Each structure stands twice: as structure tokens, then as C-alpha cells.
Image (cartoon, rainbow, N blue to C red; front, side, top):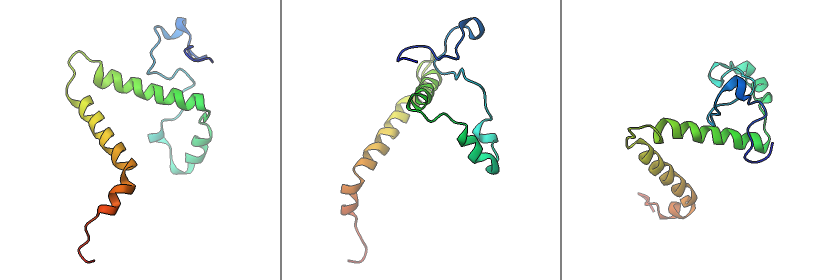
Amino acid sequence: MAIGDYPKEYNPAVHGPYDPARYYGKADTPLAQVKLSELGAWFGRRNKTPSAVTGAISRAWWRWQHKYVQPKRVGMAPFFQLLVANMIFFYSINYGKIKHHRNYKYH
């Protein structure tokens, strides 16, 4: 599969118009329904190649876009979500500098 191509599992005659937020591969048990004893086997069935991980991230992005950004009446939720994500990201990359400025009660 080259960059920009449809997934090999996608068949326009069966699936209709292409949806970038949908997984067209074989369905598996959802993570919420996996028992602890079956968790290792469930992770073993996952495709861990870089293209599969990139596809999963892309599908998550498009699901977020369809739910929060692209509806007709968009609220403030996507802006606040991006704001909080940026705050967490910048706090985590600057944590090494921030931790040296702690105030302790006893010196």
C-alpha cells in the first residue's frame, strides 16, 4: 500500500463511499470486552507495523474531526480540547526546568 492509496480491504462495491474514520479490515473483539486472561493474545493479533500504527492514528484523527470539528453547529469543545492538549504537551517537555523552581516548606 503506497501513501495516499485506499486500504487493500476497502471494496467500493461492498462498502460504498470511502470513510477515512472506518477500519475496513477484519473485525475483532473490542478492547473493552477482552478479559484479562485473553489480553496477551489480543495484543498478539494486532498489526504493529509503522503503516498500521499510522493508519490507527489517522482513523482516530478523523473520528475526532467528524465528532467535534466538522458538524454544522460546532461548539467550543474542540478548541478547549486542543488548548488542554497543548498545555499538557508543553508542561511535559518543560518539566525538567519547572521542577527546579519548586517551593519547599523546609529548606
